Length: 113
Picture 1 (cartoon, one colour):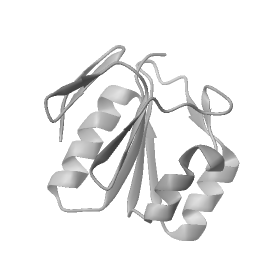
Picture 2: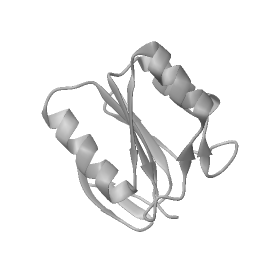
Picture 3: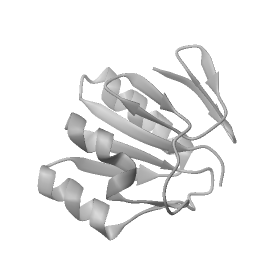
């Protein structure tokens, strides 16, 4: 589903995006903003939690500076959703691999720092 990623740019099904985004049920939710910028919290992914995926892949930016809050990690664990958070290039590969294997996967990608 994700064709390419480079700093500040991601290509999904041939369409180019230049801002952070989420993917939920194979649908791109563009222009993803988080309340605390470089921290992903429960409120930032309420739509993902409602979708109940098996996996949540978080792309933490090229150098991996964005982080997942402890509250979100606990919420995901309580719901049985596996969290995979890594620098965005690796997260893109993980996302594509899981989707190709047939899992229900949601994602949030920070495209820059």
